[in-house]
Amino acid sequence: MLYLADVRHDSTEKMLTLKLLAQQQAETAWKVLSEQEIVELRSGEAPVSVGIALVELSDDRKTAQVQDATDWLLSVVRSFLATGVTAEFLQHESERAEQWRQSLTLQSQELGRRTLELEARMGQIQELEEKLQQDRQDLDGAEVAEAGTEEGADAIG
Image 1 (tube, rainbow, N blue to C red):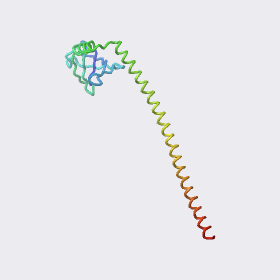
Image 2 (image 1 turned 120 degrees about the vertical axis):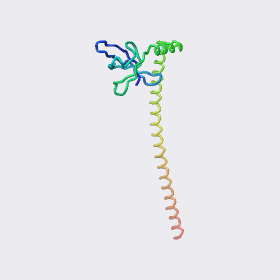
Image 3 (image 1 turned 60 degrees about the horizontal axis):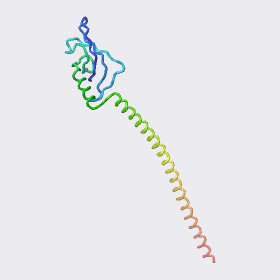
Image 4 (image 1 turned 90 degrees about the vertical axis):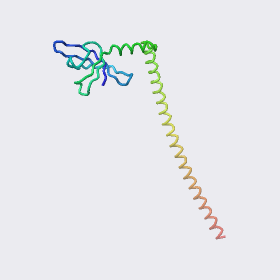
């Protein structure tokens, strides 16, 4: 897993202290770590002695590949500046995303309401169809009974 870390060197202990600041989620997405974890490595395990570094940690967090993050950070800053990404732009986009989220929530609720209404109407239609079918059967039965009564009257008369 790749992390952005603040690297400190403890010369008395001959250890590097890595304070993990952010974790890479995708190629261009990072998650700021709310609980900053501290990882210690022997000084000889990393070419960086102090500063900000990109750290690839193993699953056991005992081994790491550490590289200076200065060039990487500068390229990120350049790309943001070149594309016009500013704090105001990010705030505006965040507000737009929140508005879209709220709009989608309202649309989803409306769709759910309409679905319930449609299901209720379908139930009513089904009941009416069943009643109509029963009425037809009753009518057919009455016609058969009436025809039988007429035949009996013809036979008597």
